[in-house]
Length: 327
Figure (cartoon, rainbow, N blue to C red):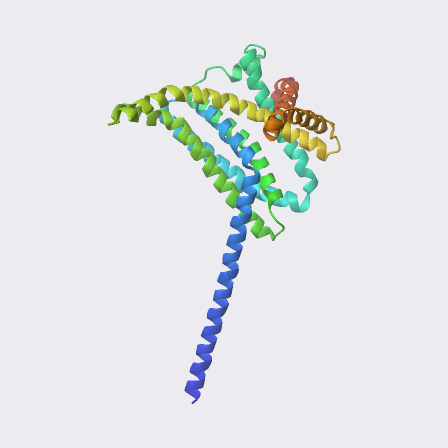
């Protein structure tokens, strides 16, 4: 009898334990679903900056041998993951918890840097000898040194764009405990990095795919498509380079304009909004598209003006000071 009673107690205890495990598993599964759903919504909110990131990156591998393109993209993608997961994720959580007032000024500082970098590229394209510092930055260098410089520049630009992505994602997340928020931000960071740099890798290697199709294709149409890819990719990369520069100015300008609104100076944002709204109303058949395009263009113009104003400060004051500090 005692043995049977003990067996029944043991069996009931085991069943209770299994019930507890099942309940824990359900909670964990629900948490995973919550994290995945929140990450998907947050990632969608940041889609605009993600597209800009994908447009900006290909220009950093232009001019290198084909064998170095994927290794460079790999190095930049690792730097991007490090930016998002090691630096920005904990920084975002800490700032959101203890110093939310600092997020806007820091984002504006990053936006100003994007404006400066975009304006520098525009000035070099229009007036290549306008500034010795800019001309030196774009002059031919040793390939190994140039690669290091390009990778460092790409990771620096990625840092600003990633900060904007993580901030938008965090703002889109529902209220939850810090661990769920961290997990959702990590999912967003990894997914966006894989998507952006996977797309960039496909873009920059598409000419190699075209060469293979043109040389080894068994069907005539396959070889024609391959030759088309080979001829079209330089044009596409040039267009993406231009789009990337425009994206820097647009994103940087919009960050600064939005930050000014947050800090009590809404007039630039209101002016841009009013002009974009008037343009959209004037073309009701494409109201949403026109409004978006005009706003983006005006944000870019604002970013260009700000960037041009920052060039003397960066090249004649900040640059020399940094050089002294590094000695």
